[in-house]
Length: 394
Image (spheres, one colour):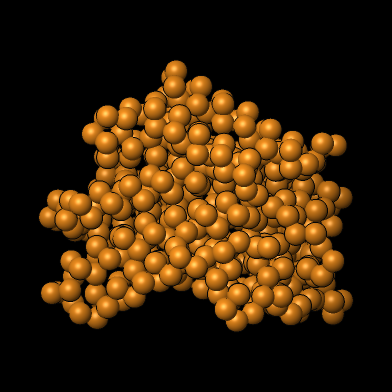
């Protein structure tokens, strides 16, 4: 009972803090909201059980590797932001166009990922918890998004982004506090878990490649030029990635050594059952966080893909038609693949985009700094390897 009250109090206090006018008006914080929402929304709910099942006691190391790769790709994109601010372009027009096309396609897949997670969490605490029911919910939400986007656009829904981020961070604070208490109790009892990895060697590496989408989202800062100066976008992207890294590493560390993956059923909503052991309050608030986070992220990426497609086709395909295309791709994935397969597809699509951005940065800085160019070239090769070799959990 005391822990339940403490969880709710932590959520309420964090929400009140995030709603302070001084914080909401701070420019760097406002610029952080979009990338942070996307990064945390991308993987927080699925990563804990997934990494624990695959890597056992080495899960925090795998999480650190994912965050390090994301930081490298983010560095290349930040360099490109500086170049665009200074020179008006990050590279040849055809190369930038190709990268934008990759991102537009990646957004289409990521929307499917977000909404399939939403569907799974929406039915997770109901008597109709099944793949068919989850897919039906996902299909209905797709219809809602297409209808709203076609008739009114997403301006009203996008205004909910800050509320969604604030709710999500508040629930993460409550979850982290509860997990810290639970893990501390297990430490005192001498019952911490140090389970072996179920994936090793090449299989472990390619599985990690298939999870890069879970730390994706920082690239959104690249496209906020109409709202924020380059220096602000660079600083806010860096801060968003650092904050997300701290959150992820703390969360994965607590889950890894407090829960034994042996005998647990691995699914996209496994976190709900795991947290029920800690507190009966957590499953409910986690489902609320999932619904808010996945819906807002899906709306943002649907709008992003629509704008990119319209720009790339020079308005031969309108934004509304692009929304319809995004929905068509998403529905095909929804009914043909499971969530873990969609995670791998999205990871490979975003990795291709990161490879293109890294290659642009490498080519541009070759004459200025060979070591920096070599790092970006290595990142481009890493992105290409992820795009080709990334796989899903079996």
